[in-house]
Image (cartoon, rainbow, N blue to C red; front, side, top):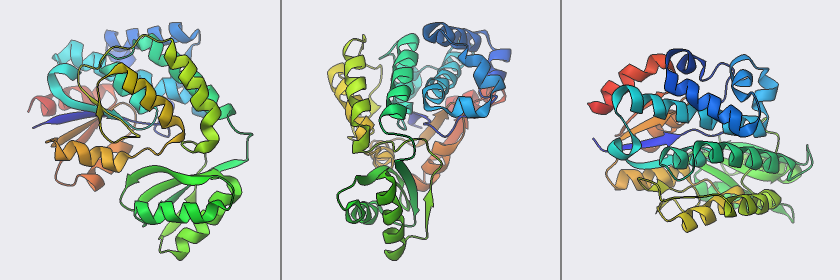
Amino acid sequence: MTTAFMFPGQGSQAVGMGKSLAEAFGPARAVFEEVDAALGQKLSGLMWDGPDAELTLTENAQPALMAVSMAVIRVLEAEHGITVANTASFVAGHSLGEYSALAAAGTFSLGDAARLLKIRGRAMQSATPVGTGAMAALLGLDFATAAAAAAEAAQGDVCQAANDNSDGQVVVSGSKAAVERCAEIAKARGAKRAVMLPVSAPFHCALMQPAADAMAEALATVKMTAPVVPVVANVGAAPLSEPAAIRQSLVAQVTGTVRWRECVAFMVAHGVTRFVEIGAGKVLTGLSKKNASEATAFAVGAAEDIAAAAAQIRG
């Protein structure tokens, strides 16, 4: 089977994530210690003991999710000889997960990935005043219809498709009033439901331009090397291997649409038959079953998952 490794985005965090890995495996402990040192923050303690409200803060959730993904990667390598280079044809990550994918593929050092995500989280949180933006999931509409509903709802405000997760699951983002208008327009156009999301900022829309500027500045000074396998980038839904192009794509990603459905379709079209979600939660595994029903998909995120996942990957 041809394998792709995928890395989860924000929303997959939960208090306790990564703890079993740290207790069972030295390489996982080393990842969490390195991230704590890079940030000058006991992030691992927050991940394992909470409080949940603090872990959910964007500036904490983003590096924390990357740390769990990297802990899984290091354990698979140390315990079973499974690496990105010898196992995966592609890597891809949902929003912040793209940084996890790039760290796993060697583009960023672990410490740099943690610092970049701390900057990204803070910049995204502070890009708009609290309460002025919103996001909504439109269920039961295809992407073109959802994007048209967003355009109609804008009326001089910002409202755009933020995440194309799967057929029938598109997230819109923008000014609060415009997103609320979009929810009503979407229902009129046939959406089964329009659900306002409990987010702290309107991610992946033009309101995030200050955060995109901050990431352009941060990425300009970070050492980047070519990934050991191509990363299928969110904004282009196509593989990238050149650091300059990856840098440009990561900046564009802050305000652009996460084209996840198309990313998966690209990988399937190029022979991927198995998707392995690396890190916390199983969101992308569920989306893979919608986007690539013929492919195998499973998640590995805790100590008890490691041996079974390694056996499946080898198989």
